[in-house]
Length: 284
Ligand code: SAM
Image (cartoon, rainbow, N blue to C red):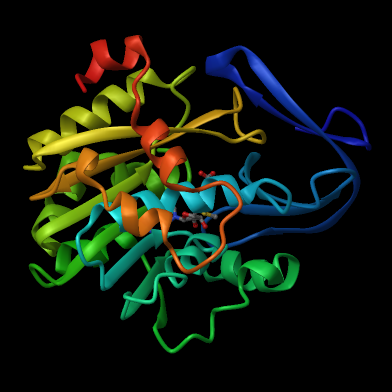
């Protein structure tokens, strides 16, 4: 929704709130086969991608989300080599995954090729590593793809999807998590963007229950700020198989051979701490 020609506004009905960003101009607008995609140039947040009226990312603050969607999961797995990203068409998560030298393959399964093509055009800084030989791109439905994936064929699965509506709805179900559990090796980590603990505890609660019902030993929500998402407080939820979130490779995280803007070992530890209302809802 646009209040007037100078502001983009996303209304969050369930939060009874809205976020507005001052815009300079609309750079692009299209209806793809799957969704309505808009790109704006903002005054202070760089470029902004919006899908079906919901903010996906801005140039200014996407590093928070992309670093927290990737590094905690990769440093929780003892030796992550084979990584699959479901969604993530803007390539920001893929870029962070490729910073890990031990990763031998990073496959991005995005339903809408147009998101990736527009990211290449309007967020080129996120796509700089797309020609890395370890990066692979498949344009198709991640739910169907995961159903057919070989058992034990991946170490880390990152679900970087839109909200649980439209084509992403099935990514938040026990059936999908069961397929992920089967596709992971003996040690495996699934991490998924899990909305705002301020506004979406119903979704978070259902995710924890469905992940555990699908066979994961442990589930844990990571908390981090994300200014352009509803409430500004966002989360990712990890489901672990044969590994424990608190046993993450803190020394390797501290000695990582690449630079980050938000993530470090202390941030990782802090993100694992649970507010009382989350502890009551999902346990530790
Ligand atoms: N950071 C964003 C957020 O939380 O709002 C997510 C960004 S990324 C652009 C989300 C992507 O998930 C979209 O490009 C969308 O096309 C993709 N997606 C949604 N459902 C999908 C599915 N079933 N399989 C693969 N990709 C899917």
